[in-house]
Amino acid sequence: MIDRKMLIGSDWVDAKSGQRHENTNPATGEVTCTVPLAGTEDIDLAVEAAQKAYDGAWGQMHPSERGGLMYKLADVIDSRTEELARIESADMGKPYTQSLGDIPLTADFFRYYAGLADKIEGEKLVTPTDTFGYTLREPFGVTAAIVPWNFPIAMAGIKGGPALAAGNCVIIKPASASPCTALEVGRMALEAGFPPGVVQVVTGSGGVIGSHLAGHPGVGKVSFTGSTEVGRKILQSSVNNLAKVTLELGGKTANVVLPDADMDMAVAAAARTIFLNCGQICTAGSRLLLHESIKDEFLGKLKALAEGLKVGDPFDEDTKLGPISSKQQYDTVLSYIETGKGEGASVLTGGGLPDSPDLANGFYVEPTVFTDVSPDMRIAQEEIFGPVLAVLPFKDLDEAVQIANATEYGLAAALWTRDLTAAHRVAARLQAGIIWINCTNIFGPWMPYGGYKVSGLGFEAGMEGVKEFTRIKTVLIDTSDTATPWASE
Ligand code: NAP
Ligand code: MG
Image (cartoon, protein in one colour):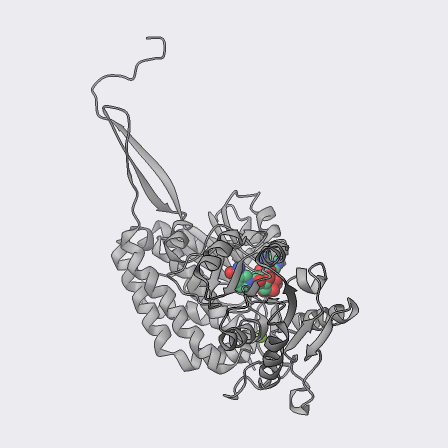
């Protein structure tokens, strides 16, 4: 078992208290490593180191040089793809074949933003006569990235990319269930040549160090991804420092299939969007809305597909669903399955644990589909964050839109149809930050997104994502040689 350290400044350190957190492999239930359980005093040191870096070499560096370091970091990440994917899968349980895709995605985020580093510009203002004014888009200095466990390394790129491109330092706080690859990003940033303190990674409990970071007077911007419940706590912490906060939160994505859709494509996508990453994706299509005329045929195909998906060892290349990432989340998913049964929904497939004795110690759940679901049931309203699908029938477009919009979430929605008019009409009416038409879960650094309703605040990715890591300063010059008159003159 390895005792890992965390990165503060250029040093790999233990928590000042000496306390450690045990990290589990969810496929086996075994403790694979320990990480420092940082306290608030450790966070204070990280903020200090970041401010020092910002006041020094990093703050003075030309943006194109900054971009150059980010390109190097992307190359280092790519050069370690297999190793990082192995660490990720052992840490959070996603199939190795999927982790292999997350590593280049992370590099892509750093690369995309590397190219933007020297293109973040202010504007010339149209000002009164004899004045000249412009805006500067400036970094905040010290920023914090507090991230969940479903895409641990990708989150470092999603948030680290725009933070660094804009000229900030970033302190990454990975989730306790999956801290390992974020620590590697810290190591690779030093290897790529970033000055100490620019990228730091601190490990510990969110309730202690996450909230301390979010409200720290030295932190100017907090970028959070996680549950809506914790997102609200982040906002409460930021009352302290009035930091700019962006929140990417929970979802209950409606995947709506109209009768004219290509059924086989839509069935495959319906399974992929809820079973990929074991349903632990914020935009997972956890509600499947089927037109009543196609429902039976669609569900017959979906059931057959779901029952053919291999649940098992993340390192077996046939595995489609690994374990749930933590014991806590496993218990949550199982309790939602019981809730669904108790609410009167029918189990079309799954609904329990896989019966293989090889999987008995891991946090495995069968891919589960509930039918006879009504829109007000908890399994149709609340984010489960597991491989559990709720199927809801509709009779016409109005009803589909009404059901799709009838949750407090508004992260994403998907629509399947060949009818262009219906597609645009429905897209305009769906209350969600992303609308996928004839696809689901396509995503990349080029695509800005942000949740509607309680799914978020602000934006991530694309040009919008980098703007969120800047603040605007206005500069106004009087170009006349006369004093500004008083109002009475
Ligand atoms: P979570 O429980 O909200 O935790 C997210 C992060 O916040 C973790 O690092 C956690 O640390 C930390 N944290 C916990 N309490 C905190 C507090 N009081 N103050 C500051 N930080 C705190 O989320 P999760 O269970 O890891 O991830 C699942 C959630 O993320 C789902 O709701 C999912 O929809 C959402 N998500 C959203 C997006 C999006 O883009 N919208 C993407 C992915 C996931 P510990 O791990 O130490 O508790
Ligand atoms: Mg783990």
